[in-house]
Length: 122
Image 1 (spheres, rainbow, N blue to C red):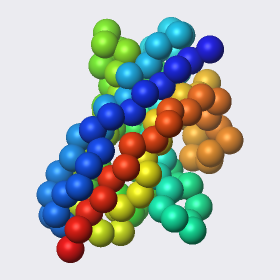
Image 2: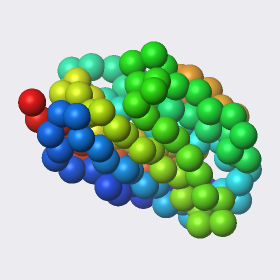
Image 3: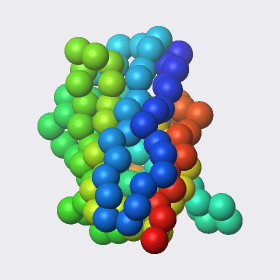
């Protein structure tokens, strides 16, 4: 069983930056692929970044590519999402997730955090 706790969300102006953190416990962290998803009210939960267990492979959709960076510190059991050049459409509840393999869909991940709110003002 894996437990995930996100932190680092908040209110920022358009063009600003935030760094989200996800602290993991209850498993062998380096054996899990990790993902960040977001969900805005009335919209589907969507992938924003994923990273392999070792950290050697990452993936981003076009909506965030070049602005967001996922990374992990396996010695600290933590995954990060650095978000730069934030836009109002980035406003959402951001979730950390863990799975056996990197994937693009919600059901590719077995464990989820509670979410942290990111609000971008214009």
